[in-house]
Amino acid sequence: MPVSFEAVLGYLIRVLQASIVVIVTYLVVKYLDRLARIFVKTEEYEYLERFLLFLKAIVYTMAALIAISFLSTEPFVFAVLLLTVGIAIVVMFSDVIRNLGSELYVRNTRAFKVGDWVEIEGVQGRVTSMNSLGITIETLRRERVFIPYVRLAHSKIINRSGVYGVSIRLEVRIPKTHDVGKAREIVATSLRAVRGELITEPTVTLRGVSELYYVFDVVLDVMNIGKIEEVVEKLVSELKKNEPSADVVF
Image (tube, rainbow, N blue to C red; front, side, top):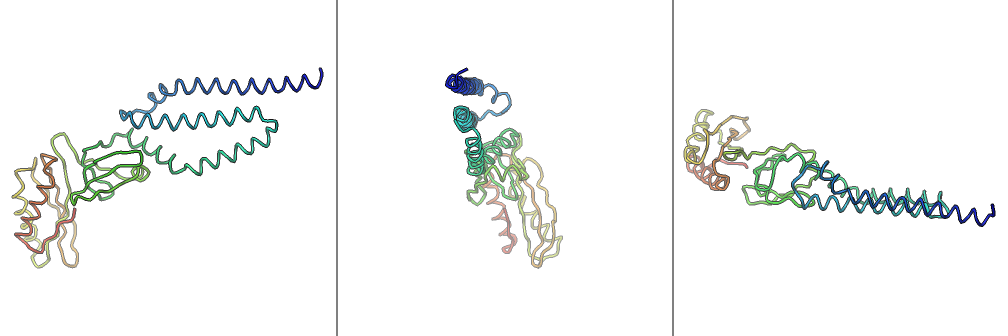
């Protein structure tokens, strides 16, 4: 066969290979929505759309690079270039990819939702938002704490919201000017002021003794999540009334 015909034939074969890549990519993207909804179990449609958009961008980018590699006159050189570009993309978007994967993990576990009262690494508060980067928690002190999904995926999450109310944990410190029995009595007496807002009897546990304080863990099962701040403020006020040097950490 003439050399020119072999060259044309080789080029047509490369065009055919590139065309197959384009067709396969089209079919993959077409059915990507269905596949994602099978494997990604979440009702957060906003996240699912964002996840699919990112996934489609990766598929299109890889398909374009592979198709170009088939059409390239220097396949080896382009293969090296393709590998370099791929590594660069992974490095550049490593944090985004990790966070997206962590978001998928967190949402699929359904450990909490917006409005729930959670405790994460000692931070307690109401989940006020879940965006593409992480969640925002509003604490009892009206502080807004942002926690990225990457951090959430490796943290212990306690959802304190129940069917009938929400459980909160407070650290109460009573000065050692009293004996331990009197200190516990001060805490128990102060808790009576908020008993009407609780589902069950509050629990008081002596966690330890510091140089200046007895440290008690107090768990309150508040009936109405909307009254948490009110209950805590009332308890703090009552504790201060019974012992001005008492302190509450939350």
